[in-house]
Length: 355
Ligand code: PEP
Ligand code: MN
Image (cartoon, rainbow, N blue to C red; front, top):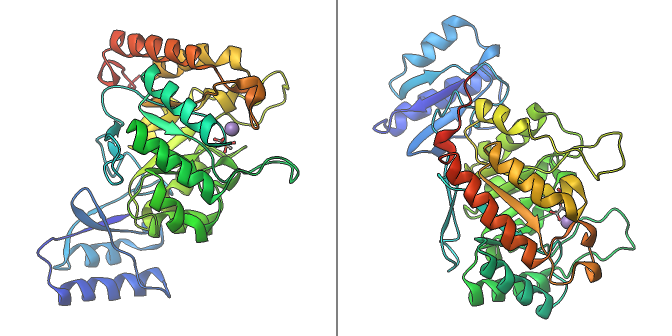
């Protein structure tokens, strides 16, 4: 259930509401209010309250209305917000602002990892020339083996900043630790939370509380259900950051021919369940460069709000994920083809998600 607070409520009326909600929800901690779409709201699990208590809450002077929400996730649900959320990226740190979740798809591209200055700046220029709008590059890399390249760390963040200054492209990079959220937010226009950390709850909370309003792109866990994924997104929003973008990057399956199994059916399904923007990552989903252009086209045809693609100036010498990295020339074609598909479909408005 979501309680919407009346904007003209006095401090006394609010305190009365908080006290009652704390008592009936059995919460030891103060109930958190969050500001979303110009309104102040409180989300909690209403199923534990009986009808009488709900009526009492709805009659308090501080309460504008109560929205019953049956799903375990509340703030990210379509029931709470019937409109698709749009997220403006890149206006805080001096890049060219980009809208994610608007009428045309957003293409994010760049190397898996920031390797050195020349590699990143060459990639950034190529990404811009190809017509993509946001630069990706991992400074902190979650690697399966401790003996693999772990990323340049803070030095990588400085290089991303330099790439943004030169090209104007906003940048996205991964954060792996709660204590590093503030640092990464100083340099990145979007924080990425990777698959391996989708259920790292302290990290999700930190991204909600300490990201200075930077949007967070939450990748689907290696074997996460849609509900687990939406609940992970709910953690970030409930902690105070409504700007969450979901990223489908393939899930574990039995076949080793592809790195993962790209679950494109999640795109129209998520449209029904949530108002959050949806990005698809065909690079990690397939693990094979030659499959990336086709699955990029398919993702946009399925109604995704955009793509995140691994691109490297010399994929065969990449320190990380070279096998799935496309070349700048391939990126140029993907941008062109996906633009045509989105136009042919009339953007998101042309896609119907209702059976
Ligand atoms: C990445 O984007 O480079 C990455 C590590 O992705 P994922 O978390 O989806 O594996
Ligand atoms: Mn990668």
